[in-house]
Length: 138
Image 1 (tube, one colour):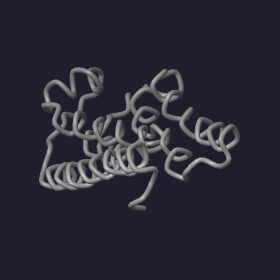
Image 2: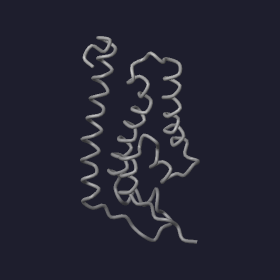
Image 3: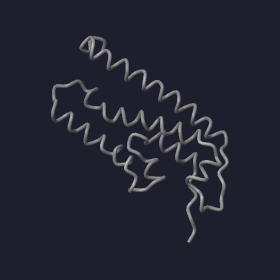
Protein backbone atom coordinates (compact mmCIF):
# COMPACT_ATOMS: atom_id res chain seq x y z
CA UNK A 1 0.00 0.00 0.00
CA UNK A 2 1.43 3.36 -1.03
CA UNK A 3 1.65 6.08 1.58
CA UNK A 4 0.54 9.53 0.46
CA UNK A 5 3.13 12.31 0.53
CA UNK A 6 2.00 15.44 2.39
CA UNK A 7 3.08 18.54 0.49
CA UNK A 8 4.19 21.41 2.72
CA UNK A 9 3.36 24.11 0.16
CA UNK A 10 -0.14 22.72 -0.36
CA UNK A 11 -0.76 22.50 3.40
CA UNK A 12 0.38 26.12 3.77
CA UNK A 13 -1.87 27.20 0.90
CA UNK A 14 -4.84 25.46 2.52
CA UNK A 15 -4.10 27.23 5.81
CA UNK A 16 -3.82 30.56 3.98
CA UNK A 17 -7.04 30.21 1.97
CA UNK A 18 -9.25 28.03 4.18
CA UNK A 19 -7.55 28.20 7.55
CA UNK A 20 -10.66 29.56 9.23
CA UNK A 21 -12.39 26.26 8.47
CA UNK A 22 -9.39 24.08 9.32
CA UNK A 23 -8.77 22.67 5.83
CA UNK A 24 -5.06 22.27 6.60
CA UNK A 25 -5.94 20.21 9.69
CA UNK A 26 -8.18 17.96 7.59
CA UNK A 27 -5.40 17.51 5.01
CA UNK A 28 -2.73 16.69 7.59
CA UNK A 29 -4.61 14.90 10.35
CA UNK A 30 -7.95 13.81 8.96
CA UNK A 31 -11.29 13.96 10.73
CA UNK A 32 -9.83 12.76 14.03
CA UNK A 33 -7.89 16.00 14.50
CA UNK A 34 -9.47 17.81 17.47
CA UNK A 35 -8.23 21.22 16.29
CA UNK A 36 -10.14 20.72 13.02
CA UNK A 37 -13.38 20.48 14.96
CA UNK A 38 -12.51 23.59 16.95
CA UNK A 39 -12.02 25.50 13.68
CA UNK A 40 -15.33 24.16 12.37
CA UNK A 41 -17.06 25.17 15.62
CA UNK A 42 -16.49 28.82 14.66
CA UNK A 43 -19.41 28.68 12.21
CA UNK A 44 -22.05 27.55 14.73
CA UNK A 45 -20.50 29.96 17.25
CA UNK A 46 -21.18 32.83 14.82
CA UNK A 47 -24.77 31.68 14.44
CA UNK A 48 -25.13 31.34 18.22
CA UNK A 49 -23.86 34.88 18.82
CA UNK A 50 -26.23 36.18 16.13
CA UNK A 51 -29.16 34.33 17.73
CA UNK A 52 -28.40 35.36 21.30
CA UNK A 53 -27.57 38.99 20.51
CA UNK A 54 -29.52 40.00 17.38
CA UNK A 55 -28.89 43.71 17.99
CA UNK A 56 -25.13 43.34 18.33
CA UNK A 57 -22.74 44.84 15.83
CA UNK A 58 -21.96 42.61 12.83
CA UNK A 59 -18.34 42.40 13.98
CA UNK A 60 -19.26 40.60 17.20
CA UNK A 61 -21.33 38.13 15.19
CA UNK A 62 -18.36 37.37 12.92
CA UNK A 63 -15.71 37.40 15.66
CA UNK A 64 -15.46 33.60 16.17
CA UNK A 65 -14.74 33.15 12.46
CA UNK A 66 -12.26 36.06 12.48
CA UNK A 67 -10.37 34.51 15.40
CA UNK A 68 -10.35 31.15 13.62
CA UNK A 69 -8.96 32.78 10.48
CA UNK A 70 -6.22 34.50 12.49
CA UNK A 71 -5.26 31.12 13.92
CA UNK A 72 -5.28 29.75 10.36
CA UNK A 73 -2.82 32.45 9.26
CA UNK A 74 -0.59 31.60 12.20
CA UNK A 75 -0.78 27.91 11.31
CA UNK A 76 0.16 28.75 7.72
CA UNK A 77 3.30 30.51 8.95
CA UNK A 78 4.21 27.64 11.27
CA UNK A 79 3.66 25.03 8.56
CA UNK A 80 5.53 26.96 5.90
CA UNK A 81 8.50 27.78 8.12
CA UNK A 82 8.97 24.20 9.32
CA UNK A 83 12.30 22.85 7.98
CA UNK A 84 11.88 20.22 5.26
CA UNK A 85 13.64 17.51 7.28
CA UNK A 86 11.40 18.08 10.29
CA UNK A 87 8.32 18.22 8.01
CA UNK A 88 9.21 14.89 6.42
CA UNK A 89 9.87 13.34 9.82
CA UNK A 90 6.46 14.43 11.11
CA UNK A 91 4.25 13.97 8.03
CA UNK A 92 6.15 11.84 5.51
CA UNK A 93 8.06 9.30 7.58
CA UNK A 94 6.79 6.34 5.52
CA UNK A 95 6.95 8.13 2.17
CA UNK A 96 9.86 7.52 -0.17
CA UNK A 97 9.58 11.05 -1.53
CA UNK A 98 11.32 13.98 0.20
CA UNK A 99 10.13 17.58 0.46
CA UNK A 100 11.94 20.48 -1.20
CA UNK A 101 10.59 23.97 -0.56
CA UNK A 102 10.86 26.48 -3.41
CA UNK A 103 9.93 30.07 -4.23
CA UNK A 104 6.14 29.56 -4.34
CA UNK A 105 6.26 28.71 -0.63
CA UNK A 106 8.30 31.84 0.13
CA UNK A 107 5.84 34.04 -1.77
CA UNK A 108 2.93 32.36 -0.01
CA UNK A 109 4.55 33.07 3.36
CA UNK A 110 4.99 36.75 2.47
CA UNK A 111 1.31 36.98 1.43
CA UNK A 112 0.27 35.18 4.62
CA UNK A 113 2.26 37.58 6.77
CA UNK A 114 0.83 40.62 4.98
CA UNK A 115 -2.80 39.52 5.07
CA UNK A 116 -2.57 38.00 8.55
CA UNK A 117 -0.93 41.08 10.08
CA UNK A 118 -3.43 43.35 8.34
CA UNK A 119 -6.35 41.28 9.60
CA UNK A 120 -4.95 41.27 13.13
CA UNK A 121 -4.45 45.05 13.14
CA UNK A 122 -7.93 45.65 11.70
CA UNK A 123 -9.47 43.31 14.28
CA UNK A 124 -7.74 45.06 17.17
CA UNK A 125 -8.69 48.48 15.81
CA UNK A 126 -12.35 47.50 15.36
CA UNK A 127 -12.52 45.95 18.83
CA UNK A 128 -11.09 49.10 20.42
CA UNK A 129 -13.50 51.22 18.41
CA UNK A 130 -16.48 49.18 19.55
CA UNK A 131 -15.38 48.87 23.17
CA UNK A 132 -14.25 52.44 23.81
CA UNK A 133 -16.37 54.58 21.47
CA UNK A 134 -19.36 52.35 20.86
CA UNK A 135 -18.55 52.13 17.16
CA UNK A 136 -18.31 55.86 16.50
CA UNK A 137 -15.68 55.36 13.78
CA UNK A 138 -17.42 52.71 11.77
